[in-house]
Length: 443
Ligand code: FCB
Image 1 (cartoon, rainbow, N blue to C red):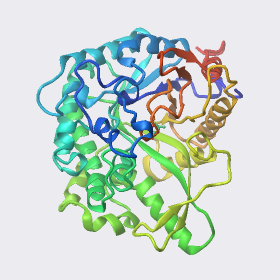
Image 2: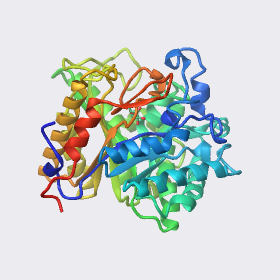
Image 3: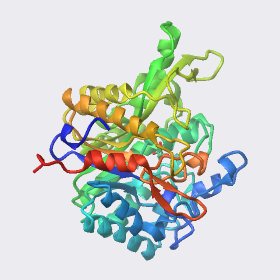
Image 4: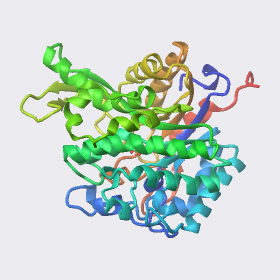
């Protein structure tokens, strides 16, 4: 790789990210059922109807996996703590095995010199709460804060940071409006409620964490580089609408206490009554922003479709195994825009960036190595332009359960054989390891 640790500021953190449902194995250790277990059983929802029952068996192989992070010379590990593993029914009875497991993870990180970056909600809603409407129920804010208190009570003294949610857009829009993720709804009222309740849950959880004296609390949001596919005024309007729902809705609520007009044009009539009253709690200060970035979103107007009357189009650049266009300058643009318009000097982390590639253990893995290099360059340039970027987490440490795509899309630095569950570091693992190895001029 062209860049290495010395190209980044002293103290810049390099790490890798994972999420509970994608790696742990939800059938182990007293974990309760979640809406992903049942969504996966619905016709046409997930490739081969695969689920996370075993996943990478990280629940039993966590020591090997933490060793892989340490041996790569990583500084930090981003992981999530499954709500249903800690509280199987979502509320009430706590599963001590679940708390013990996360304590092992956190202590295991610390023993290996890895800073634990925790995410509270990375997509698996406990089924008992999904039965009550999940993200469409306003009480989800208190349910989530209660869960946060239970897990923080056990590991909060040792985690480096806590993110409330991972990718609010996916939790709300992708899952309740586009129907691609659990619970698979395509309903504007459900979507509008989820679009607000994720923010409300973020705010309520922040309040609870502050009450517990926690610092280093924030959120992880996903951003795309939205662009109109032509110069026409109608396509420009389509891009502005998509930018509002995808990129602006959540960060604007959190940093300014408001929603963009272009988003309210569609969701406004379906928001829960009195939503304005929640905006103060939603916009309380955060300590950091996590940015997940993968690709550009090229869009055209589709006047025949209902609001937002947009349609995605495929760009001309090379694509990853997901079909996502490789567009590193979009990461630079996203980071500089966020600093300029929303977060100023607040510490920012790229909490996910990476690519899926149909690699095998013995392939050269050059595509992934080039991808990482190009995106590191974008981060480097953003830092030069004044962004307070403090770290980068590659998505993902391991090949894992890629949600609706099952086990087919391989994002890992480490190959996982899903028959034997053997782990084999890929060439990108070795390339990143040598790029981030401490240099002589480091102190
Ligand atoms: C992000 C998710 C993560 C993974 C990557 C590829 O949207 O946060 O769990 O699926 O995409």
